[in-house]
Length: 349
View 1 (cartoon, rainbow, N blue to C red):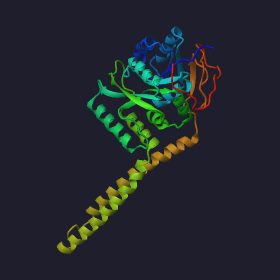
View 2 (view 1 turned 90 degrees about the vertical axis):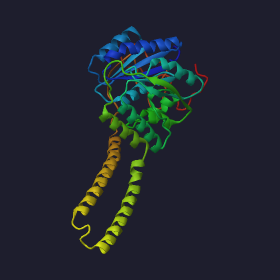
View 3 (view 1 turned 180 degrees about the horizontal axis):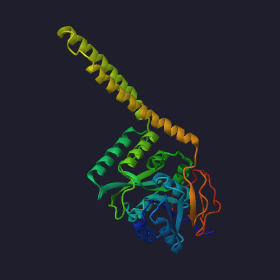
């Protein structure tokens, strides 16, 4: 049996045919330059632009590259999860294949891991090529999440990060469907540190996170790690009740002084009813989001469906770590090197 792989690189792919070859070459250059043993797991999330065929070509030429193909598009966070499930390295690195997160940063992540850190997350010091609205909304989003969630989620960080295998073991046991992976790795705990890097602008293709998906992603983040939207309802209710009493007293006083004609008619009543109704509908929406997510989890469907793999064995069971994955061929190999959760140390090689 050969030595364990040091680093597993997990990259979700959705219509990135124009970036894939360059991405692979930059990953290979970065890891070989650092003298690391590695594997690259490309998760094809239902691509329709020829990305899958190109991944298989690259995997034929390099047995360290492995391919997981979904039966349909399941989304970025689910694709990241699948990569973690199949990874066999002592450390797992999450990175997008669009080259906005430079593979050249990977050796810096590994260096911090070797110092004894279990999670090394990349902090965006600069975001090239992004619009003002994109930068502004991202800044607000990260700081809002940081303030209202129950855990310490670092600001200005994406999924680009390294995690030790024992962190990956815990993540494999967290099977919720509405996933916020960067929050989940913060929730796990252990020893964590950030390093700064410059996020590059996209070279080819378009963003896979338009406004609609950004809003859905933000809802997943908030509802996964905070009850703040539910808790704030009581404060707003108290505020509205106090305002209603004050308005009632003021209007009654003005009518006594200025006569019944003052504030006469139904306009004021209609405005107040519309205002209260809008708050009620908004609160129902918030409650509905939590209820819908609870219902979704209760169905207990699999997170994803894999149509095929290349160069891989079976995915990892929640409380296991994998030893050596097959170097080529279709899936079907069993699990190797079963360990219980929490067995890992420092002094990494």
